[in-house]
Image (cartoon, rainbow, N blue to C red; front, side, top):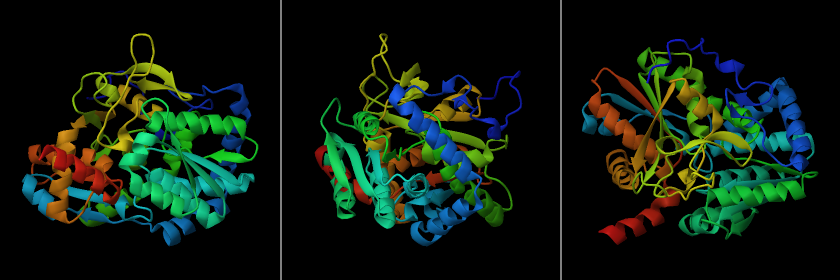
Length: 408
């Protein structure tokens, strides 16, 4: 949808404001015991982002340990199958630990070490952020505790073992739906109790300021590389960028460098689940409204009394009731469009990409691929789409095999 006619000129660097607001979204909604820790973190990050030595060390680890830059790959057979626009994949799945999450985990671990915090906690849904955090902690010799919903531990057993193999303590959460929301709740309780010696590496562009800004900045490298790579390959910018959106870190990382390019359409894809009936999905923009959850004001799925609704997604990483505040702001501005992909569509496209390209995508990333296939079929052959392939699907193979076996 186009921006409102009276909307002021977009300036991506003006957000968030000093209080962490993206328009009416964002801010800080936490217990008083965490205010000092968040203020300390904001101050430390402000110094680090301006410190050439911190940035140089981060670039070194992103290259030597994580494996940046990642390739921009033309999916030729998938493009031929669609018969329309070219589909390029930004191959974050090729990074060490298997997803874009390592960008943020390495950066925050460096920041924690700079702050003198030797104990790290994290939450994880699909397990990729937990694995990335465990790897970063192992590299830098930091204590690591990861909270994960018991249901997610069952469907992501491989990642649980990977975390433990790298020395992390994985604590299962039995409350509620036993998924990502409950894991974040437990991580925040831990942080309140151990705030003096502990840093919370939040895994997505969500939560209280400065997390949405900080996580976005640590993932901007995705869009920076993609911009340079597509100009080198095609001599022009793409027509559309597509990324899955749970909290929204991989998406805002790709989108940020293109926000002020009106000719580039930006599309986030949410989890459509079994259907868009309440409790059957995690598509916040297909049934949510303004509210506050886990430190942040944003669009979220809630009932008339403000109680958080049940969510569902075939992908653990998108199974969350809220969306990052920067996404909500740009959606209101008409700058980022949002769609959803159903579980059935995701399972079909998971198999399609695997067969045609020899690339097994994460279930989260496959949501973006579902929409990319639809868009490529609708666009002419001279158009270009970039999809953020935010993670690889090794972690999902056993879960998908069970689902396909159950429906065969």
